[in-house]
Image 1 (cartoon, rainbow, N blue to C red):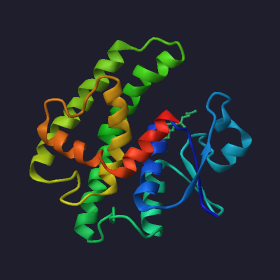
Image 2 (cartoon, rainbow, N blue to C red; image 1 turned 135 degrees about the vertical axis):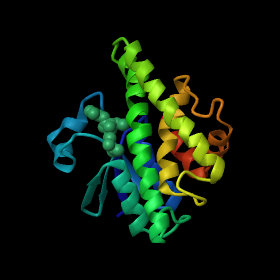
Image 3 (cartoon, rainbow, N blue to C red; image 1 turned 120 degrees about the horizontal axis):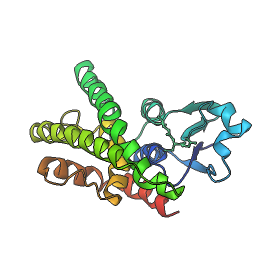
Length: 211
Ligand SMILES: N[C@@H](CCC(=O)N[C@@H](CS)C(=O)NCC(=O)O)C(=O)O
């Protein structure tokens, strides 16, 4: 049975998982979770993820949630693709470092900004300008450090592509639709982002946006 991916077409965390599935060439079935009817809060869905959030996978009865945990599981349990977690212990530690920075200093500010700019207006609520400003400043500070890191190495964890690079793409893409271009005035971030976001796996995952 193919992996079942419980997700929603317009979500950044869902796309982290679909991108990794495409990257590794793993067949999967997309099970759309309907946010409009709050399917993520249904007893059936909460039995899989008690936090009531997508993405979640069912790999022949093995249930797993949290996008980055799923990405690691797929990388470590399925062959195929370029090898997205280094095996050398020091390189792997640098990967863990980059992945932690992505979560605590990129997603941590970018996701609330997306909430203000896209989610609130969708629910007919006003974005909070002070929150937008605060999140934008934090995000810019993170990206200024990325610019320095990427001046010295090809990818965010070193000179090989890793999951830590891929984790950034869905959120960066949505931010750019909200007029926050992570590459603006940052030539090394631009070189990096242009390369990783042109991968066929992302182009396929991005197409789900229009689904
Ligand atoms: N840390 C989680 C975040 C998951 C998350 O926030 N999912 C959102 C969509 S991007 C969701 O399911 N929202 C529905 C809700 O909160 O009711 C992950 O990386 O998987």
